[in-house]
Amino acid sequence: MISNKIEKAINEQINAEMWSAYLYLSMANHFENEGRKGFANWFRVQFQEEQAHALALMDFLNARGGRVVLSPIEEVPTSWESPKDAFLATQAHETKVTSLIHNLYAMAEAEQDFATRQKLNTFVAEQVEEEDTVRDIIDDLTLVGDDGTGLLQIDRELGARTFVQPVL
Ligand code: MG
Image (cartoon, rainbow, N blue to C red; front, side, top):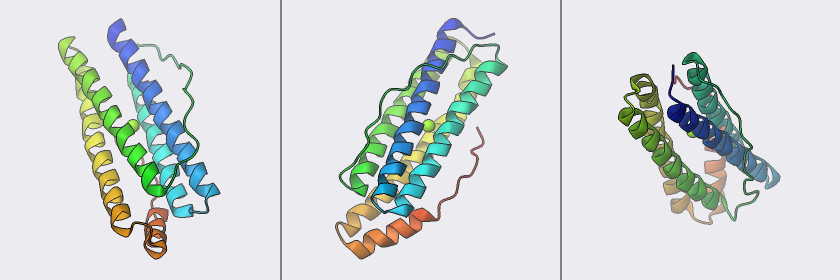
């Protein structure tokens, strides 16, 4: 069985992952509307990844005999000044998610919930990857600045991203 405290914290994390999914889906639609199909594709895949994070936590909570409680998902922004603006917002958000995961990890450790702590190892690693990927894209966007050809090139690259089910 899982403690009420950890159960509540995992439910909060599920909500945070669902909010992330909603945020990236909003970005995908924003870029679709702007005619930047590659950026739209990248964020749509990102949306799928966040859903996978939430589902993995739900599966884990159920496997531990806990109860999944889905709370309302807060409203998300709907427009961004530029692709770089959206990626800076993504970076800020992922940094926040990383600290949420770390807090949850610390709680699992304090509660001696070793199963939760072990499950979270994959999430800790996943966050390192998320932040690294986003940093690389921001670097590229900084390099091209307002250059249309450069932005088109990045749009094409991001258009090639496909969803790969993360192993969590
Ligand atoms: Mg996530």
